[in-house]
Amino acid sequence: MKRIRGAVFVCVVMGFCTSFILTQDVKSSNPSFDFSGVEEFWKIVEILKADKEPSEQNWQVMFETPGYAELIRREFKPDYFKHAMRAVYMPSQKSLAEELIQRDKKKGGFFAWYTPLVIEGFRNADRHRDWIRSRIKELRSYPYLKKAAEEALRFLPEEQTEDYPAVAFIIFHDSRGYTPLIIGLSEKEDLSPAQSDCLHRQGRDKHWPFVLHLAHEAFHLYRDKKQEFDFPESNSPDYPIVWILDQIENEGIGDLINREQLYYDDGCFVETDRAEMYRKEQEAQPSIIRIMDAILKEMAVKSSLIGHLGRQLRSFIPQSGHPTGFFMANVIVRQYGKEALAKIVRNPFKFFCLYNEAARKDKQAPVLSDQAVDFIKRLESKYAMK
Image (tube, rainbow, N blue to C red; front, top):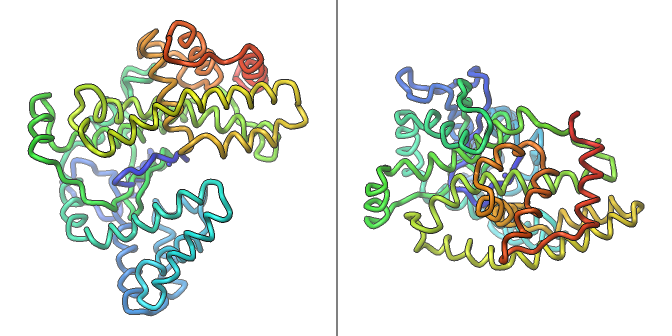
């Protein structure tokens, strides 16, 4: 989810400073995990359920916890959370939920598909509050950070790291690879006996799916610490196109960490509805890449439209780049292996060029036009670090 992480069950905020330790058990295996956002969220919920309006101080305390503070700084206005929480938890405001959803659908863009997920995430969190409490106890005791870092580094040129992110959990349906990282609690996670047996046969345990979700977010954080390109200024016509190219690479490789292991081939969740949804998404990606190519070709010859077309492409690519990037990253892995990705992991322009080389060898992947690749190389010459 800085990154949109598809509907992840848990939202954790990680950073590299440990000053966020507010509610930790001294014996915690993850001393940088912070749960203050969860605690303050439930305090607001209790006020709303009594059909009362929290004071500004109540709201402010929640918004100053590490997770919510970072989301507000980067993406959301405080009123976005206030409206959604009122709609879900205040008895007199139940009709507000559908109004918010319809309002954002009319606006189109990101919030048209995102707001319904936020609303449903808050509803699920209330249904599963007891499970969330027990989950927090578990999260303190299992060495998630060490294992997640090991998985994240498989797609990075570094062989090891001593930087284990500080983590702040919040109630939310999604994740972000910011500093601090965000992975938020909302929905109960139950393993079927078959899934548990499968994980056991692979030498894993029930914690492994969350290790991989956490590793996905840690990958973004580690990658972005050492970017090999500069973003254009936010008001630059180039900003939207550079942003979506980076999203596609960043999310695509990140999904190789968790989505690939869990939902494909011999993954223990291959028979789930989510796996079927992912497979259908992948079937659509060749058509989406062809349309992306057409837009890039247009940008290559009409410099005056770069800003407009970049915004169009940013809106067109689904789920902030997850499925498209996943498709492209898999094409590269099939032809050149994971090591090739690690070499160019911090340069989205090289990712697209490497994809195109791989696509020429891969009968299942559309090849980008010479005009599109030339345009991407022009962007690289402007923004890649020398």
